[in-house]
Length: 318
Image 1: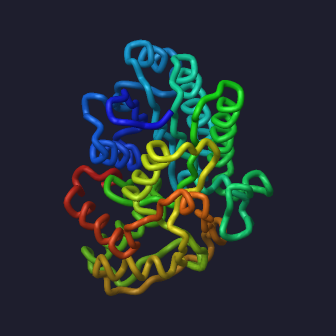
Image 2 (image 1 turned 135 degrees about the vertical axis):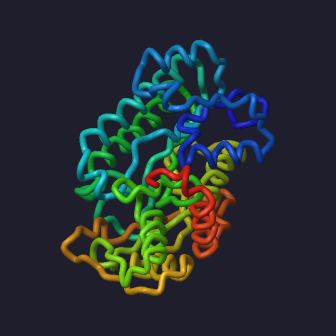
C-alpha cells in the first residue's frame, strides 16, 4: 500500500512542528484538506485509549502519520524524564494498536536520531541501532522511541502491515518551539540572539563547550522526505532522514548570530553538559531511493527567524 490523494489520512500532532509541515506537504501533493483527520490536543488525548478508540470508530482512516510526541532539549529531558518516557510510550502504543485493529495498513512513525548509541560510529547507519549505551541526558525519551521502532517492525512481521519508522536528524523551521526551558538548541539560540540584540546585551551565554557537532534538517525537507517514502517507495524498514552534513554548536551560534544581527560576544558555560559529542546520520538508503534535502542551513535559519519575527505573539515560549 502507498500513500495517495483521496485516502483518509490522520495526522497525529498536526499543530506541532512536524505535523504542520506534513499537512502542508500533503496539500502540496494533491491531498484535499477534507480528507485529513486533524484533532488538537484539547480535542484528543492520544494517551487515552478510549478517546483514540472513539476516533478510529468514527473516522474511516486509511493512513496514520504519527508525528505527535513529547519532545524537548537537554533541560526538559533532565527535569521530566518520567514524562518523556511515559507519555511517548503511551501515545505510541495506544495509536499503533488502534490503527492495527481498525485495519490501517500504512503508518508513519517519527522517531529521533537520539535512538542511536552515544558514542556511535559516525555517520550513524540504521544498523547501529541497539549496539551501545545511550546518551544519559535523553535516555528515557530514546528508549520510548526505540520501543516505537520495534513495535512497528513487529507489526509488519506479524500482521503484514507497512508501518514505517523514520529517524529524522535535528529539526527546525516554522512553528518551532522557542521556549528557553523546553526548546532544542537552534530555536533557543534564535530567541537568545534576538533578545540580546533587542536589549543591547554585550554577550550571550550558551551551554557547554560549543564543540559538539549536530546535523540540522529543515522541517519542510523532512515532510517532503516522509511523504516521498510513503508515496513513491515500498520502504518498510527503519530509515534515516537527514542532510548528510553536520556543524559544531559554536559555528551554528555564529551563523545564527549573523542572521539575527547580534554583534555581542558568545560565552560558553563549560559547567553545563554538552550531550552527545557528535550526531550525523548516514542517509545512503534514502539517497539511493532518490531523495535528498534541498534547503540549506543558512537559508533555513533565515526563514525560521523571519517566521519568528512574524509570529512572536503566537510562538510557543513567548
